[in-house]
Picture 1 (spheres, rainbow over the protein chains, first blue to last red):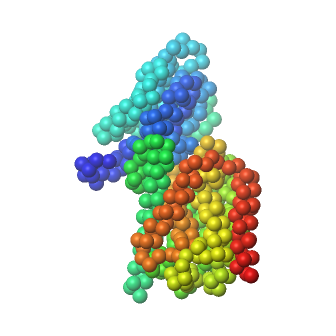
Picture 2: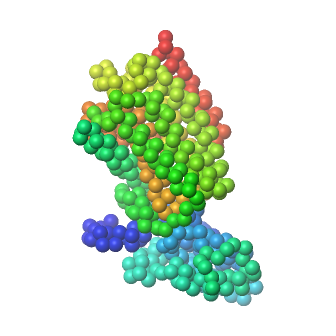
Picture 3: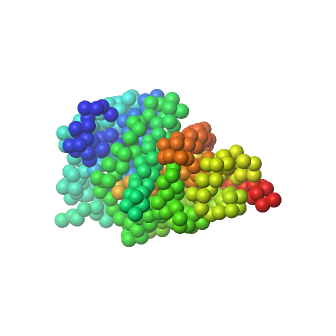
Length: 182
Length: 295
């Protein structure tokens, strides 16, 4: 921590603590899990920036979705996202969550993940290098600083449309709505 | 009177600061052993600030009260522990009271987790209780032999005797007990090789699985207290306490570093391997120590 950050800490402790204590839960759907261990271990030690992997969505505030999202794995992704406590940030890792990537014409793959849960940032590439995660986190810091990482607020405000999209993809959902729906 | 009240307020605060410092130091040193740079020393504080600002959902009344109960139990234990010359409740209780109140911490977590109704919590708690069954046997034998040797239950008197006659870990029959306490110390702290209660890879961090936000922050504070208490007890009973707080914390730091080195290099036991270990060597040593003390 720099010394010139102390005034920032005093001004907005919640924001700064959110920035420097990103506990990540990563959802490895297909590929991309190989890129995560080098980031959290000694090669690109992400714990320098306070990023550690946690085992449960309750403790996490950064959700990393790596690789393609099939229809079957969309369900646990939504459940995991809804179980996380606010404020929470989401990063889509790889080109498949963005627009389907190489599975653009697959019948069983979710093409645009941000129709179903809000995504704060994307890391494009197939696959991105491990250091791209750290670059993405620095971009996320900027977004948090400027109050632009508001995915969880968007989810709360537009819950009706998100829920409708989820029902379109998955059929009837077997869990109650997170927020009151009209 | 005023001094007493100041001490009662000050000692849990000091214990908390030292415990949180140890948590941060543990992460830093573990990182250096892994050839990483590691987080800043105040990372646990940053995490706690973040967790206290985060929204959290309660799973019921016992979920809230259990964690408060365990935290309260730990704070009360701190009041009975002398560190340096400071002991707020020196003339009441002693080792026996500490033994009873120390049970509140795991019990509160178990009660709180029971309301969480997650299968991982049940597995974690059952492992925790089995593990405590494992280390309570040698711990009780160790404390019994210490109490028999000094013919008192007051920790303050034990510290005073050790100040004049030398550390008890250096005296003959109590050396075995001290060694036994050190061997079960990782189990009491539930660090590796005994971290099967909160194994993130197997049971998604066990009793902590439903904790988030404020609950997780309180659980981290509780963990810091437990860290402080078990090491402080070791320093008081076997390393002769200390004249002032500074030396006391230096001694605690040395013991903690030794524990950390064990934590860094060992893999995790399975629960039945842990019981097999705990009931073999530490219990044998503690039992031998007790017999030698009685003779």
